[in-house]
Length: 72
Image (spheres, rainbow, N blue to C red):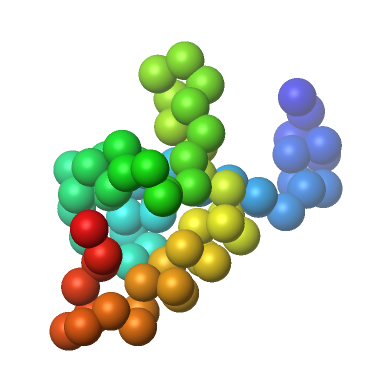
């Protein structure tokens, strides 16, 4: 894919590292979260792709939990 095509699209997904950095947690903790049934992640082979909008919806839904903890 050429650079022109890449730049014409808004990024619709996050890597595990990008999602972790966005909410300020470690890569290992984010990788753990991707194994939860309620976490929005697409697995393509060994690569995990996190849809940006679904991730933001999931993250915002977690904010109402007691003490800000992510629900188990």
